[in-house]
Each structure stands twice: as C-alpha cells, then as structure tokens.
Length: 221
Picture 1 (cartoon, rainbow, N blue to C red):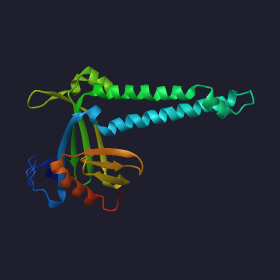
Picture 2: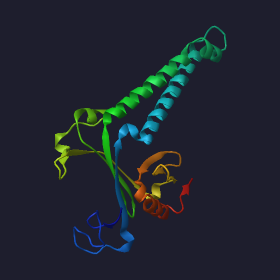
Picture 3: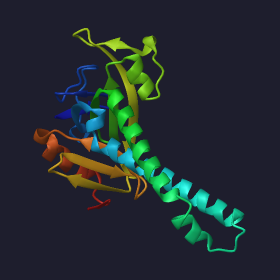
Picture 4: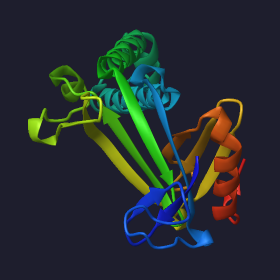
C-alpha cells in the first residue's frame, strides 16, 4: 500500500499530512507499506537457507576427514582412493545431510506462523517479523521468552518482535524481481541474499516500481 513517510515522526501516514505531528509530508517522502503472514516452514528463503547450511557443514566435514586421511594414511596407498571407496565416509556424509536437513525443517515447523511487516521508505527498507509468543516458538528461534517484551494488539492477541532488519539502498549490491512468486530478493554483497520481500500480488507492481526507481544503477536479473 502506497503511503507517506514523515521523517520527523519516523512513521507512515495514509495521507500527505502526518497524523502524528500534523505537518505536511513532501511528495518525495512516499513509501510503501505491506505485511505478509505465513508459516516459517512455508518460507522458501528459510528452507533454502537450511539446505545451504547443511551443504556447507557436509563440505567442511568432508574436507576435515580427507585431511585426517592424508595425515594418518601410512600404508602408502592413495589416500583419496581409500577415503572414497573403503572408508565408508560417503554414506555417512549423506546421512548427516539428510538428518541435519530434517532437523532444520523440524525447527522451522516449531516456529509456527509469523507476520512480516515491510516499510519501503525513501532511504531503505525495514522488515520486522512478529510472532504470537510461546516458549516453544521462542526457543526454536533462539530467543528468550521475555514476558516484558510481549504486547497485545487491539484485539487482545499477544505479539512479540522476533526479528528486525534494515537495509539502506546504497548497501544493495544487486536485486532480482520474481513477479510470479510475488518476491523481490536483495543481495549484500553481490552473492549473499540479505533480504527477501514477500509482496502481495495486488501491491507487487507498485512495490517493484518503487524498488526499481531506488536501485536504478544496481545490477538485476
């Protein structure tokens, strides 16, 4: 939803006059605000992160064990050949990858439903992730269950800020748009996915247009 952003109050407003301080908001302070609600296990970016982490872990274990094979191989045989064919390490690494991935997906399933709020303002993009807190949801996110941090909305439903990230446009190395999936991916540096924007289809064109205007000189694909 296209909105206006008051730099003095640091808050969006549906009208060109700030509802907080009452002062007019200039046209160059237009921002875009939306939210997305889904289960953590249904977020492809998080699932992909689990797969990449486990692949990295398996690769590190493979290199470490191969190094040990070179160090302790005193038989004079080809260490790599012995390591790959007779050590039994390859089936073991496959099991590590499979069970590690299942464990990561199980943790995502425990995290439950989350609500991500996005603010695309003149200087950058703010993403906040809110949850309905329980001890299990907090622990699965490596968060402390802090009753002082829990608030209630207008309907009396408790909520807690689980994660917050802010990305200024100059720090974006490149970005990619995925209209069919309703996503935009921002990278910092070039090959590191820093932020994924899940955009409702009815708001996608406006958000993508604003993003393209802010990142005119950035690489895309």
